[in-house]
Figure 1: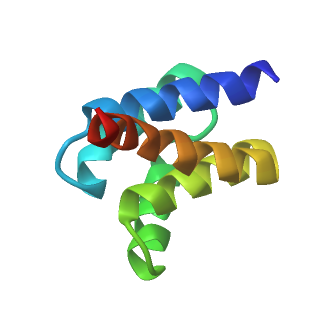
Figure 2: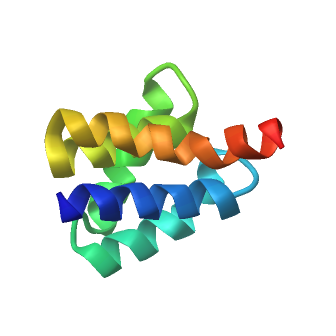
Figure 3: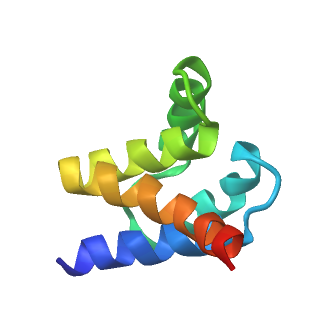
Length: 93
């Protein structure tokens, strides 16, 4: 369960500070991969290709990809949820 909490934290941080769309999340993804070992730079290139070719926002697609490849279905739900959560909180406030 600790891995899912870390995933939630990393994507909450990314959603809070990455302003400018999906490509703005790339520095956070490189840092996240280096810090956690969940993926490497080649995996980030694959994520970009898959996220660009699937419908939906690029950042959400990458969060889903990271969550699913690292933690399965729970990760695929937690990743994009916590990526979008900072925006929802700011809008509500």
